Amino acid sequence: MDLTLSETQEMLKKVAADFVKAEVPAHQMTQWYQLKETFRPEIYRKAAGLGWVGMLLPEAYGGAGASYTDCAVVFEELGRGPVPGPLFSAGTLGAQIVFEGGSEEQKKSWLPQICAGNMIPVPALADTAAAWGPESVETRLAKSGDGLTLTGKKRFVFDAEAATHFIVAARTDNGEIALVLIDRKSAGVSVNRLIGFTVSAGEVVFDQARIASQNVLSAGSGWRVLDAALEKTLPVLCAYQVGGCQEIFDFTVEYTRSRVVFGQPIGRFQRVQDHCVDISIHLDAARWAAYEALWMLDTGQPAKATVHEAKAIASEGYHHACNYAHMVFAGPGTDYGHPLMAHSVLAHTMYQYLGTPAHHKRLMMDVLFPRK
Image (cartoon, rainbow, N blue to C red; front, side, top):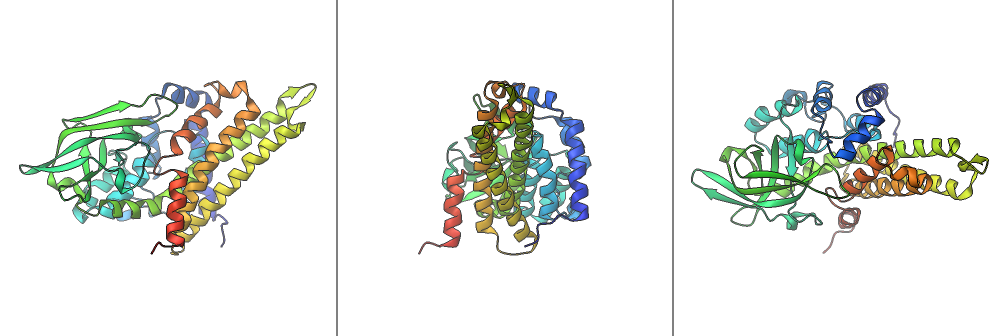
């Protein structure tokens, strides 16, 4: 297994790092997260102009035809920001769902718009906020005249406020799961921001919202399509979390060198050193798990178990890296003007996004040791 970055990947990494420094300065980023104004249309448009929306898609549909690792090195740098907005939820996962489950006509119509940043299809999948899997889908899709109606409530939709469209998982009359695309401006669709120690998340309500039959992506195999899209995109999300861990490690170590207590830098105290070591352990675990999954995808090897492992380790790693950094920074780290708070709120939100670590560990074991 060779995880050395190519010259092209090193270039992508540098361009993304320069983008973050120019477009997401820390003083501005912390304000966005404090006010929960994390969708910045100008940033999303610029990222789309650089080809970072739909990176994994073939060029025939407006994508970049990039490898999984190409995409990941960009998202790792974006995670260092952390750059807010639907670059993963819509620009990567949403685009991949359309690619995996859409008809040729749908792909030719929608994917170029997604890659250009004109269409932002945010997945709205689970109805039960704390659950994940096909059993969490309760929204109903019913026939109504020459079309369909959507009724239900998605209680946790990441980047809901950024959406121009939603990709909705819903139950059909025969109990199967379908995926449908609906315009956010459709009658019967409303979005409510979630309040609490979370960010970029909203509740989306569908009250007899009408959908044209041609907007059905997958009539009865919706969750299988979603699983296929997740297998290819979750490692990219993991790379974003790795970037967050790396940024936390870097500014925490720097703080231990500059913060002086009792006449010496706090980095000389063993307990502080222990916390920095704990951050580095979670960072390394998340990095190597994520990049192993990416390497397996790029080389065409079965990667399902490794992808679940990476998602579990990266979500736990980001969450724990924030906790250990708070132990080092103490009071100053709880100020929303400090970058650590932005990472903390985001890590807390992402911990259960698309399945908790415990859920993905169970799925990993199901792949490795199938139940009879």
